[in-house]
Every structure is written in C-alpha cells, then in structure tokens.
Length: 97
Image (cartoon, rainbow, N blue to C red; front, side):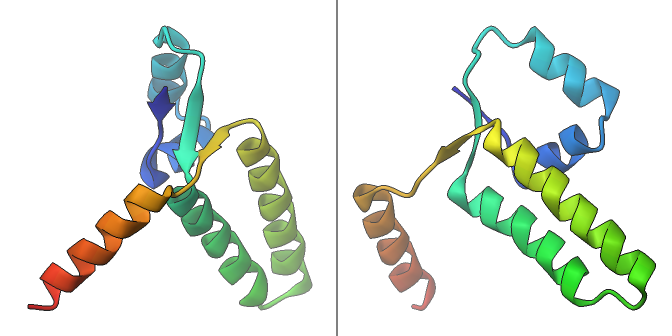
C-alpha cells in the first residue's frame, strides 16, 4: 500500500507532474490516505466554503469541495484501528508530562 500525506495529496490534486509521475511508477496499485488526511483536506475545503466572501468564491469553493470528494472516493481510506487509538491515548498522556 502506498499512503499519501496531506501535502502529497494536495500536490496530486493540483496535478503536479512530479507527484503524478511518481505515483504512476509505483508498483503497488493500492494508493490511499489515512482518515486523518481525509479529514484535514475536507476541513480545508469546508472552511473555504464557509468563509466565501462573494458568490463567485462560493461557487469556486463548492466546485473544489466536490472535486476533492471525487478524488477521495478513488482512494483507499485507512481507518484508525483500536490498537492505533490506544497508542494515540498513550502518546497524548506522555506528551502532557
């Protein structure tokens, strides 16, 4: 499986040639993102939609949100597992010390 982080997904979405070519050269056909990355990307799109200042901005934000949803629907979304959530809790506890 080939996991994309938020920045790489953003570059892919923008059609950056180096990212597109790199993905084409990968032997693994399973390409995905974590649920965290999905949330980050959608949050950015929704924030843009909510903060639109003009009708033109609103239409652009809507279009970007729809296109992003289409892209995400083509990718495998890796969920948080029980074990990962326990590790998250452990790390959060350690970071508070």
